[in-house]
Amino acid sequence: MITVQAIPLLSDNYAWLLRDSRSGAVAIVDPGEAAPVAAAIEAGGGRLDAIWLTHHHGDHIAGAEELQARFGAKMVGAKADAHRLPKLDMAVAEGDTVALGDSTANVLETPGHTVGHIAYVFDGGLLAGDTMFSLGCGRLLEGTAADMFASLQKFAKLPPDTLVYCGHEYTESNARFALHATPDNAALQAFAAGVKVKRAAGEATVPSRLADELAANPFLRAPDVATLADLRSRKDKF
Image (tube, rainbow, N blue to C red; front, side, top):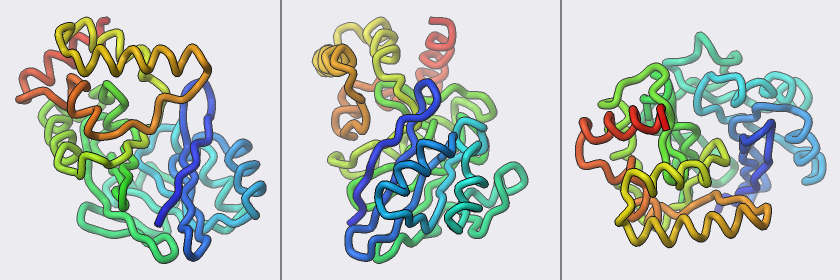
């Protein structure tokens, strides 16, 4: 079983500290800054076995090489993006599995935000990077709406109790757009009210539950590529 700890970074990023409860093996996902991650690792015993990267953007990888040098962790990332990631010890593609002690995660290729983006799925959890956020999805910086639609459909097929660990605390602003775009969605209205309470209390809004995203996230609910493209275009200008 993998347990997950959020590590807030930069202005609104999250890195995710994973621990295999049986073996004690530890991984960090998307360390965009080294110091707070290193502090969390030292507080937990000073062990780091692996660094899992979802995509190449600096706010997700800037601390990776420093952490690798300090703790001797293995670097894992997308084979398709190996040329613009820190040097990889394990280059992965869809269908591959990544071990963490006695646990494993499956790799999904999830282009859209970037062309080489990947996500990791383990028992009960989805490390979505910047492909999907709570009540939102990533900007189409490199991929197409068709890419993003296909990636989100992969997520939609996961078990509904899956917890979604995304890369940013964007939920409150995403809720404002979602309510604008789909104002009659009662599930969204309830979700957004809960988000407002959490943020007012200084609490994180992620991880979220996939079932709740399927009911409320307009991007995940888009029935076709054209609808997703329209939503994304409107969100970019909102």
